[in-house]
Length: 631
Image (cartoon, rainbow, N blue to C red; front, side, top):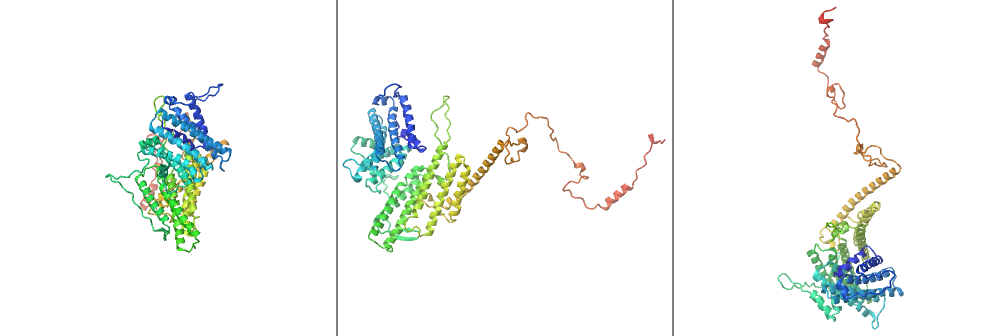
């Protein structure tokens, strides 16, 4: 049935539309599907609900798709109402949202029941159960986020239902991912399941140091023996850690990193005064080593996979920052003076740990943006349609739509904004503003990402044909690079600087050259568009050239003159004189004063004598009459 793939394909519409548009699209698809299945009510007849049975599903699997679409439409309706109330849901609106989520859960559970009765494959049953668990988790999440509590539940324990539902979905999708390796399962875990489960676990009072998979295994409904057997049949390591084996078959133990006793921050050494901070920093070092090893082993992995590998480092860094804050708060409660060595070491440690946390966040954003920090914008290769035409030839690959390109650029701009905001948040840390060099470096890095943001927004304006706006944005990006970035910014020997906030001189030189070239190109396009507009205005005033275009191919048209493309040549051709051969004037070389010809020097005496002798010779007297006889 491919339930997960079917639903994931439908939700791709959310990339370019909101929940309301998605709901309208689902309504049209449901109506078309009902007509195809014969489940519509004819005109002038009373509506009678027709339930879907297992026999219907056996005859056509699209009956399950109908239930899934109904569930998805109810969920989209709830999310649309929630999105329109930014200040929070209250009263009847909240009840309506919960009612839609309950309806979505009921339809999803009905689909699970039918899939079980039909006796489909284990994978289809697990996918249906995982989707139903996600709908149940969404209902519990919204119920607890609004402050509603069931009877007998108080405080953080009311979030356990939400944690259990999302834990079931997480374990099932992780098992399917381990067996089949499909990207659709990976995207669901990274984008929806893991963030929601992590937040629900935090609200339930669980420590952030506990991994998401550990929380999912703990709260998975193991009392359902049938579900446990189905999951283990897909992945035997779903409920226990999988050992890492070397090539010779021996079990490979992970390296244990000792807790450090001090930290280095910009040439200053600070002692770690709290053991919890040292343990958290050891976890950060371990997670960092895993991350670098993963990136080195999988250089061709997708950007989403690489970004997902940052989760462990980010969680460990956040724990280290929390530990440093907790230790600082304890000393402040004891009213320890700021001049005390312990307080000074904690201030330095807190600044270093928080900067590392921001650095890893920025590194993750840079991985999501793409190669060269988003300077390039390659088009996505569209999939070839499996359907063929009536004559058997395949359909041509359609180019990527402009709306999809703009949507990808909007996603990039959001990541740039998050990166700039993270960099600016470092200045709010205590002690950061006292270091002028450090603040200048932060401004330089912020200017780098501001320039990238301007470049991507300029690309979007170019796609829309607004080249003048693109030119202004590129000039703004050039100002960011030229006026803010110092010449010595960046590191020369860093090979994997894209992992963190650190910039290399290669990054700076690359963006400078790219902006310069793109600025020149856009400037030329603006000038050409201006000439076209002037020509169009001149053409509107009937100002056009009457000369044949073939006679003026070497000359650019005069500004404001419209070229008549219908006046290229004379057709049919007429009889016209044309030059046949060049005119030779070599005979008159000695008598014609050509430009550039130098006159000879003074004539020699011998030449003069010869001339005089010729002059002195007299012409003989001509005889008169015929045959020399005179008259």
